[in-house]
Amino acid sequence: MRTMLQVRNQRAATPRDRARQAVPPPTVTDGQARANTRDPFFDNAKYLAIVLVAVGHAWAPLRDDSRTLAALYNAVYAFHMPAFILIAGYFSRNFTGRPEQLRRLVSGVLVPYLVFGVAYVLFKRWGTDDPDHPFALLDPYYLTWFLIALFVWRITAPLWNLVRWPMPIALTVAALASFAPSLGNDLNIQRVLQLLPFFVLGMKLRPEHFALVKRREVRLAALPVALCALVTAYWSAPRMEAGWFYRTYAAQDLGFEWWAGVVMSLALFGCGLVLTVCFLSWVPSGRRWFTALGAGTMYGFLLHGFVVKSSRWWDWYEVSWVATPAGQLAVTAIGAVVVTLLCTAPVRRVFRFMVEPRLDWLFDRAPRDAGADAPTARAR
Image (spheres, rainbow, N blue to C red):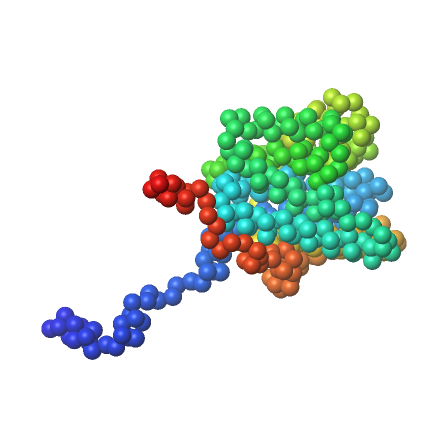
C-alpha cells in the first residue's frame, strides 16, 4: 500500500517538484570545502614562519648594538626562508605545467611580482624623495625576489621530477652559483640558485616524512639541537659575515676565496635543514587560533615590507627607548602583531586584487592541449 501511495504522489507531482526532489540537499559551500581540505599543520607552519620573517626584519637595525639580537637574527635567518621554501616545494610536487596550473602560476606569482615591483618602487620614490628611482623588471626590489624565485622554481618543477638525481644536481647548482659572481644580479639569480635545494627537497617529500618529524623523539631531540644552534650563533655573531645567510652574493663578493662558497653552501644547507626539522617538529598539527592565518601568509609577506621600509626611511629606530631591552621586546612584539594583522581576512579582501588577482579575462576558457588533439590525429 505504501509503495502504491508513493507512486501516486510521484505521478501527481509537478515537474518543478520532481526537479526539486532530484537535487541533493546542500552540504558545504566551495569555500568550506577548500577550508576542510587544508592541512592545519602546514597552515600553522606557514604562519609561524612568516612571523619569524617579520621579527627578523624588525631586529635587523638593532643587531649591531646587541650581540644577543645578532645571534637570534642569524639563527632565525638560517632556517626561516628554507622552511618556507621547503613547504612551497612540497606543494609544487605535482606541478606538470597543465593549463590550469600555468594560469594559477601567472595570476598568483608572476602578476603579483610585476604589481608589487611597481608598488615598491613608487613607494620608494615617495618615501625617500627620489622621483628618479628606476623601474627594473629584471632586478627584483626587496621582498619581490621571492615571487620571481618561486616562479622559476615552479616552472622547472617537471624537470626535477624527471632527472634521476635531483638533490645532488640541485646541491651542485647551488655550490657552483656560490662562487660565480659573473652571474650578475638579474632576477636575483644568486638567491634563486643557492636556495634551490630546499625547493627540490620539498618536492621529494611525502606526507610520511612529515609524520616522522612529529615523532616524540624528534621533538625531544630538537630542544638540545636548537640550544646548540643558539650558542653557536652567539659565538659566531661577531665573527661571521651575515651576508652568507642572504644567499645574494658569491663568495668573492664577500671577500672570500671561491672554495669558501662551496663549503658555506653545503654547510648552510645542512644547518638550514636541521633547524627546519626542529622548527617543524614543534609546529602544532591541530587547529589553533592562528591556523586560518596560514592561508594569508603571502599577504603578510608582501605587505609587511612597506612597514619595514617606512621604519628605516623615517627613522623610527632613532627613538631612544627602542635600544633598551624593553624596547627590543616591544619591537619584536610589534613585528609579530603587524604581520599577523596583515594575514587576516579583512586585509586579504582589500588587497586581493594585488596578491591574488582574478585574470579570467586574460586566458582562453578552453585551452587546447596535445591530449585533446590526439583523437583527431588518429582519425586522420
